[in-house]
Length: 83
Image (tube, rainbow, N blue to C red):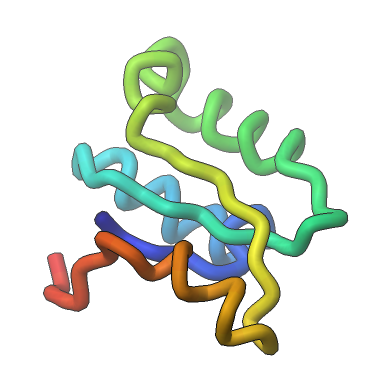
């Protein structure tokens, strides 16, 4: 499992896209008040119909990087090994 912070932002969405293309599982974290609509639209435009198949590899979670306790669940199962 890969972890991408700011996954609904410009750079983060590109990281998520490349990981999804590789068939990797992605845990994508964002701020609680952030919207994922544009990020998922970007994925759908780039991946086409394949996004529906790969969508199960994408898990969106709200997290605050300043709150260590909110990160404990987010980091559970995340690999530190580069792919």
